[in-house]
Image 1 (cartoon, rainbow, N blue to C red):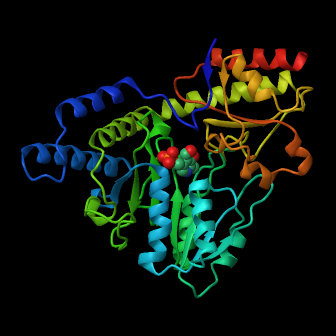
Image 2 (spheres, rainbow, N blue to C red):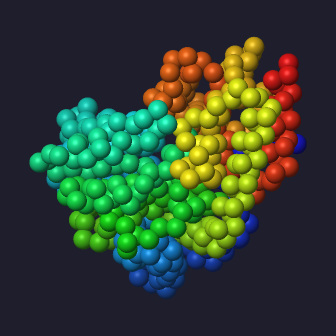
Image 3 (cartoon, rainbow, N blue to C red):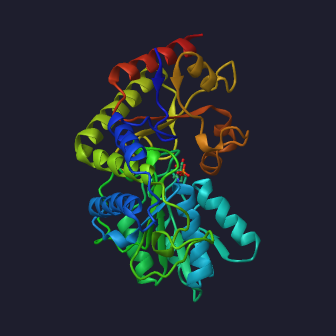
Length: 379
Ligand SMILES: Cc1ncc(COP(=O)(O)O)c(C=O)c1O
């Protein structure tokens, strides 16, 4: 049996999304900046998509900027806030994705910003009192805190943080790459300035995403070039990708309540089953807390096996695809910075595996995983 439990890394594309993109690639190839009919035809598709995306998030179309994905969208926010908005101080957490943390470390190393790292507790919860203290500054400040952590699933109380930032006159960016398509956003009601999205996390294509920029915030494109995307992102738009993203987002929100129920059932089954099979397991971050973490993520710390850190490999040869820490770090042999922050040195010796589900997974697949784990730990 082959089982894919790595949906926080990426998701398979839905057939309807592929069909939408193929239609655009076959029939709407014009450059959306061209003024002739072919160009106008592509422009219509992009502007319709922008309106649909904006409606799903309860905001207006001119606040949605299409990008090549989450990494680019995060870079635009962070770098343009400094270059265009006079931001001198950025507050973030040690648990952010590399697209945020590495960008900020680079900017701090060049002397472009003062970087503050807010405290988190052992479960990975952001210390809001510490955040409040860090906000007591005269420097123009941007807070960048992710909504849902890609490794441990922890959720940030988005509205509370947004309100705190607003009260302290700070800009607020949230990397919402893991939560878009899973949580309902009401951007008209949430005083947030920037959110970022990546389509391949909700059954859309890779290499396309978007950035929400609150109306009136005057950032300009990070890469120098044409005036596409209202001057906020140069380069010819990926029309088929944008159409695929929009289709995937519409589908993600169409059955979201049922989907969350299903993901919760899978998570519950895995947590209960693994506790029964291997009673000494524990859970990283808040991934076993149903109210405070994504339904799609469970990050489990297993007892050390005689084969050391071969657990992930053993799962793989048994057909189970999961991830040790963040997949974005695979290929390098650095461990997960998230787990390093939260775990004691002793805890770091034990193998931790992130299992992440999509609506396509089944209880039968979780049972198969439990059988494989039973087999590994009985040896
Ligand atoms: C939280 C988070 N932010 C940003 C990204 C980067 O998105 P993209 O793959 O579209 O560059 C990822 C991808 O893993 C992610 O999980």
